[in-house]
Length: 234
Image (cartoon, rainbow, N blue to C red; front, side, top):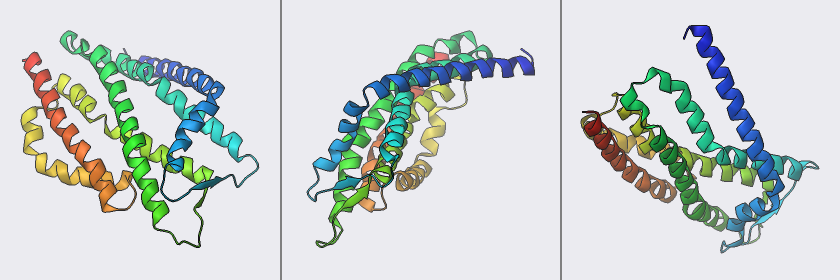
């Protein structure tokens, strides 16, 4: 393909991806009340009561569409990963193209695993921590817009971080990453993990360590993934 042909191919891949997200968002919006109840559940299990408030007239309307879009993105994620792979696959060798199914499956399950970890571990602890450092005379009345922004940042951040083994699979399949390289920079990766965890989690050391521990395990798992891929390539 020429340069313009590549741009045309990219355009159609993006169009298909946006259509998939739109379909997923419509499906999510039709079940938005169920999704909202699930996302609001962490505020109901804290030791200190948390009350959420809508501060603008159109607040709930925008929140529902925002959550629908994020949910639609997650629903369509396997298709988005597949479209990304199809765009780069023509530049790969035949033995590298066989990784398409592992990449799609592994990428989606890793993202979902990260979101679940954030929902069941990081979010409850963070809400418990922030709601407990207040004053007895001050109620925990939070804006629902800020709550969902906080929730989305944590969940999506955890899901993206859990893509580390998938990135290792892709880079190893095209010969860029090797186990020896990752083992050599293991100490450097620990510092990077702590820095990334501090950006994703609330500003307290315990939350950072809670996120850092699974990330360190994911890095070790990525070394194993790279070793398997490079062994098969050899």
